Length: 345
Image 1: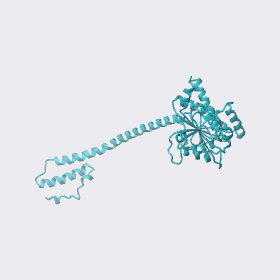
Image 2: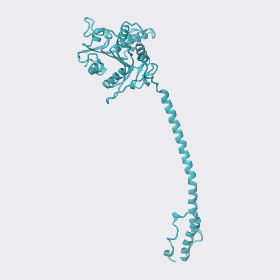
Image 3: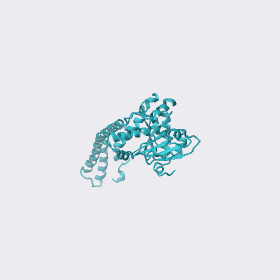
Image 4: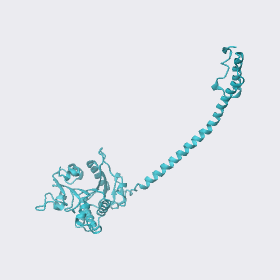
């Protein structure tokens, strides 16, 4: 009998064998050929082939259990990962500050922090947790500036000014809101600020924020426009007194502590500032606010800008287009703080 005599087409292929009858049929065909050639082993090939297919069948029956075990392990790992992600999100949520509700009366936000999207936050909120207004013009923020607005500015107005500052200065900006009650009441409040009479929530918020930063050994950068500059003057005076009275510092020690405070004012209504902080004051000579009730359109004869704070830089210029505007006038002439302190405008 020749190999060609074996009916291969009628014999199941190895990968098609799925039961014992087919195994025996294939084994019989092979044995018939081997016997004719005188080389048939004793039952070994059949046993070997049968064992192979039995092993294959055993593996097939075991595979679902193995797969189930793997799926169970994967589901367990996924559940652990999901639980871990939930706990992580809960930790982040616990750290995230809660914004105050919108739509409240303007005075509700007086002295409160203002962050991104014009959202207000309680004054007990750490500055590090308040989402700031970031530059929207591609500049990379290098620091955080605390900004106090002037009169007749609601929270939305302040938020718009904060965005303009962030873009101009390349900084993150957080506001302390000086709420408006109308021009007349705002002017009356400003008079109280000038003589340190009455309560101003924005003054208190600035004073607490600066004092807390100094106690932590941190520097802080402040900006104020119009009445906002007056609020900074009053608040910094309060901080200086607190350092000397509560902390027992000498005048020189208080000045040294306050040297960590950088201050920029624009068309401010304050005519004097306490010594200690590093100041840069911008005064448009044709702006009625600083010219009449601020540092003046010109230096004071004989005393110069002594009341502007020790070592202060006062930059006076003329712009008649929109004399008192923060965004259209003052921010256009502003230069980086360190450059301004070198009097390089």
